[in-house]
Length: 161
Image (cartoon, rainbow, N blue to C red; front, side):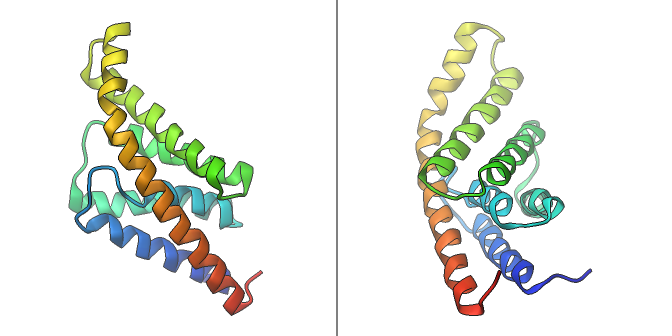
């Protein structure tokens, strides 16, 4: 399997971000939403855009653990990658949209798995998730900015297409 120069740079940025997930961090302040948006935005080959965040999750989940909610979380990252592929931009709007996609999909999964399937259960689930959403926003914006500006600097320096 061979990659062009641009793909090698993109993969190296994804790998560094993934390693950050393995370091201690506050709950939900993690790089994977940013990785999914970044991959969808910058990988020209859709299969790599889709595979990068999923591989990142699988590899790190081997060390961090899998749970009942894992398939739903992976689904949310596929949706976020799709946001990147559709908009082809990483900006405040797409980062916020990606954070909201993760929040809604993952919490619908948490509600379905762990709460009564009722209006009250739904409201309770989403209300209790708000502090995690705040942490997600912090992590999503931080890692998105690092990935975006880091990649732009590398691309300019290496004259990538």
